[in-house]
Each structure stands twice: as structure tokens, then as C-alpha cells.
Image (cartoon, rainbow, N blue to C red):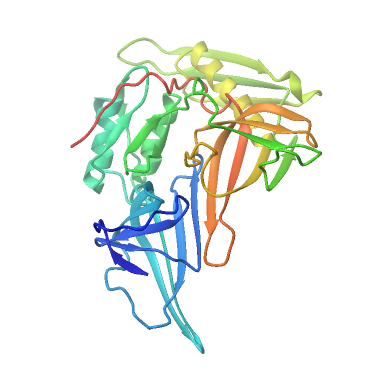
Length: 363
């Protein structure tokens, strides 16, 4: 269905209803839809299908067109259409549209050349994003480190460079629903937004399903980082830099030694070793929870970065978990559901300091 945006007389809005704003018009009433968001995938994505029984093809729906994806009155993603499929078969006439958020252009386009330039991290991020049409950039960190120099390999994409600069500071890039590129980390001081319950008796349950996956693949009882640092204008280099981190929860001997060609000092080596252990633990446990609708009991949209209290008697779980990814799904004649990917709390980028912020907005 097509209708003008911002009309004076709007029907009472379904808080779970998915719509696209394209070219000043609202598109909704899908045969099916899927909206994915993840902190570990570079670009959030969406896909919708609808029937065209009257054969009317909306002219504003075209690859490259700007899109705002909404659930109810809330914006959940800002980006562009990637692909349109217009299909006609006997007795069927349908349209499939898919797209991604602002990370798409960073993933596919070469980084602007900034080789050898000294710059604050916020300045470097803005210089990489602005030429590709991304005007809103925000650094969420306890400080804005001065980079000794920015090196860009020929052919490197803008996303590769931004991710590398962010990871060097213990941070990570993602896009907010309004299209802001954020480099920062999680806020582990935030209170859980919801409690999800699965009792053996069935009384008070609000989970449709819960799947737990545990693994020892790429888990290590100890991680050793060996390396050296190169001299810079700020100081001399160092040889035989070493750090060791133990993970007692593995339960048996599984060692890993990693050679790091450039670590600044023993503290940096320790941070790197901690990250390797944390990443291994993150990959060792997945919880996939399915719930009805797209919102918490308090009306808040599910969004990666939230913390959730999970109680499951069959799995012997009663703890707070970190929401790493979520998928909205639904459509005409289908149930409206959300799939939540939960990870062990306080492991993903724990030192990023998501609560304290230094902001850099680019006009």
C-alpha cells in the first residue's frame, strides 16, 4: 500500500508495523519482511516483499534511493535500496526490495587517501566518512587519541580502515538508526531492558523458544602474546614484549601463542591477550531467543547493545546477557516475531567505556 507521509489524519499506529519511507511516501503491508541488525556484521540489512495485484510499480522505488525503515513510529535503520526484483509469473505479480544502512558505501568503496597524516581519531574518522556522503560521525570514548600517522593500503575500503583504527583503540564502528556512524563500545552499566523467562511449568513464560549452543572450538586455557614495538617520535621501541592470560573455565590444557609484530608495550600486549581470550569465550556460547512482537514489555524496540536478564529453568540459566544481534520478521498472515542473539555479558569490547563520551559531529 502506498500513502502520503505525514498526513493529518493517521489511523492508530500498530507499534510493530513495519514501513519504509521512500521518496516522501510510506510503503507498508508486506507479504513478508526481515530486518537484521548486528554489532559484529558490518552492515545492517532489510528485505521486504509485496504483491502487486494491480500491476502498479512505484517509480520512486529504485536502486540507490534513500530509505528510512520504521517499526511503528520509530526509525530502526537509515540507508539506501540495494536491489529491486520485479517478478511476474502466472497468477502472481510481486516486488522484492532489499537494502542496507550507511555501512554499505563504506564496505564497497575505496578509502580516501590520508597516508602519513597525523590526526586525532575523530578527525580521521570524519575525513574517511565525509567524502562518501556520511555527514554524521560520533566518537564515543573516554578520550580522542592522537594518531601518529594514518596509513591506508591501496585498494583498502573505507570500512577496513575505520575498523582498523577503531580496533587499535579497543573500539568498534556501527550505525545508529538515524544514520550516524558511531565508533565506541558497549555500556555495561546500563540496566537490563527486559526479563525473558522460560519456566518448566509454563507459568509466566514470555519466550517462544530458546536454543543454547556451547562449544570448545577455538577456546584456549592460556594465550601468550609475543612481540616487539617500533620506535616512534614519542619514544623508543622495545623487544621481547610478552603477556599471558589464563582462562580457567576451559578445564584442560589448550595453549595458544600469538606473535604480534607491533605492540607498543607490555600493557598493550596484555590488552591484546585479554581480547583474544574474551573473543574465544564470546564464540563459545550462543543463545538464540525468539519472542513475539518487536518490543519489550515496556514498549522499547529490541536493539543490539541492550542487556537482558534471562531465566531458563530447562537450561539452568539465571543471568544477564548482552544482545549482540536481532532479527525482526513478519508479514501478511504470519506471526510478528523477533529473534535475539545473546552473548555472555561484559566480554565484547569491555574496555571501550561506552558511558563516557567525547563527541565529534561532522556537518
